[in-house]
Image (cartoon, rainbow, N blue to C red; front, side, top):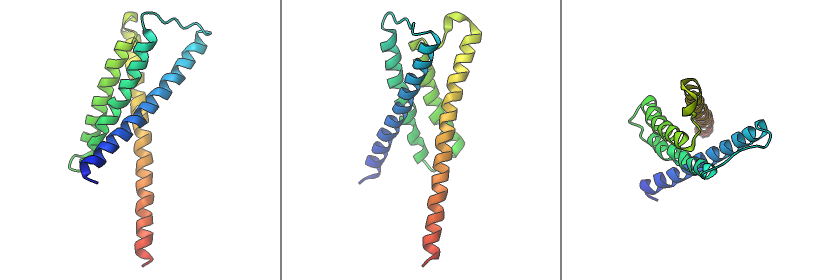
Length: 150
């Protein structure tokens, strides 16, 4: 299989994985809001559809640019800047269009919403980074064991 096909499959995999995370967060946060409002959520003018579409765009917004990590010539910091810069831009644009950023409530709530969303994105990134780093260390350890046993 060619490198292009592998990258394409990985982008697709990462996009679906990111979409799964976005969907789970959407559902869990929706449930928390529903419980907090005692079952009284008010959706008008396709609010729910706008929110669901935002969720469907945010997943690939983070998944597609994750292909940048395949470029070994770029330092990790630049890779993270590109990946998270694109992902967070998509996240914030979709959040604004979905109504998750309370623009009508003044700068305090807007800053709080933006900060919370970016913090959540970086926490998720950090979990994946550390998981991948642990897996790579275990793989390297196993390779060393195999080499040393010969």
